[in-house]
Length: 175
Image (cartoon, rainbow, N blue to C red; front, side):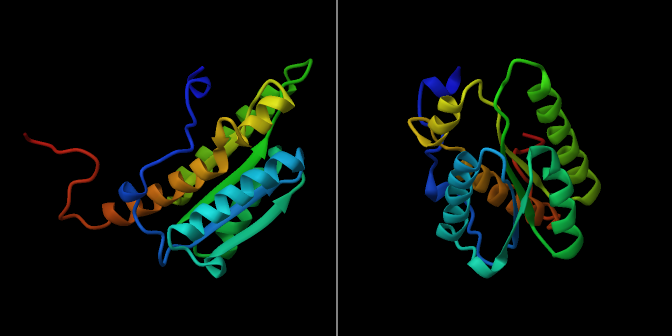
């Protein structure tokens, strides 16, 4: 497992676009509240650290991870946003319930992002245990909420960059 090797929440500040002027939505699942709220804090603080103002961040809570895509849709329907971050935690149990929920959420967010043209970030943990979740919500493997915020900033900047046709984005062609 890659996250066992290092803290993946570390990133190069100098390589991240500014979030100044960007507008974000954050949807947080109430289920596994101790985990999701730690992820939310990391996410919110990272957005603000990189230039977003608290007033440019709309946050709502939904009951569980399954409701994250519907919450993201509500935010997109009611606010002009540059990206939406969905935060949740689905811990493996004795049945395949976790797989169905995680798949439904991932599929729902991907579909919403493609249909709306607004990046919908999957900030959902899918650990085997509560202890593994804690390790990824501010523990020894960092805070995956930070990573979700960094991804949202990068995707919002990319979306803005792609609208400017004079510049190549991501890689060079013809060389």
